Image 1 (cartoon, rainbow, N blue to C red):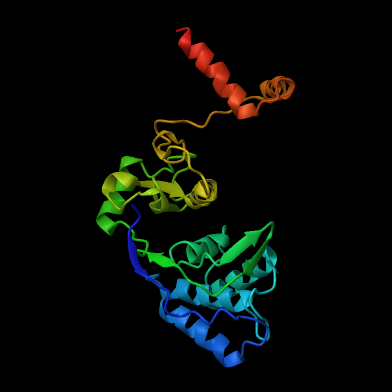
Image 2: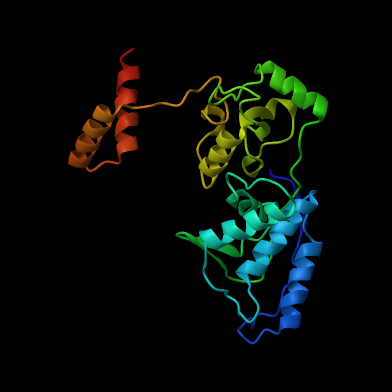
Length: 250
C-alpha cells in the first residue's frame, strides 16, 4: 500500500463554486493549499502555487478555464529562471506530483490542456524521499556511474535516484528499490508509468539489468499489423499469442 500522510479535505469551498467566487475566497483557498503542501523543498512549493494560480486565474469560476500545456510549461520555466536554475527537461513532472503526492486529483488533463475542475483536495502521499548521500554513492558505484537504462555515463549525463517500482504502485525507499537513471531516462520512465498497470517486476524500466527493451524491426511491425487487422486482433495480443505458441513447443 502507498503510505498516506493525511487526508486533506479541510480547505474546500462550498459546493456552489461558480463564477461569483470572490477574490478573497480564491486567495484563501490558494493560501490553504500552499500551507498544506507536503513537499520538502520550498522550490517545488513555489512551483505548485504558481500552477494553481494559473489554473484558477483571478475572476474565473470553477471549473476553471482550459489551460494549454505551453502556458503550464512557461510558468514552471519562469519559476526556475527566478531561482537562477535551468529549465526542466520534463516540467510536467511537477504537475504530476501536484496531482499525486499533493492530492490535487481535481486537476484533469484533457488532450493537451489542463483544467481545475473542482476545489476538492484528496489525501496526500508521504513526501518523496531521496537515498542518503552515502547510499546514493554506493548505488552509483554499483552501476559504474552509468544510467542503468541507456548506459550513458556520468559526468556526460547527470544521474538521479529513481524508484524502480513507483511509490504509486507500492514501491518503497528500501535500498533495493533505488536505481541510477539519467535525467532523460528518468523523465521517460515517469511518463511511461502514468496509468500503467502491468507487472513492475518484469518491466524493462524498473529492472533494465534483467529485462531489456524488446525492439521489433519495421518489417515485422508491418507484418504484425497486417495479420492483426485480418484477424481483428490488437497487435500486442497477436505478438503475445505468437510467443506463447513458440514457447509451448520448446
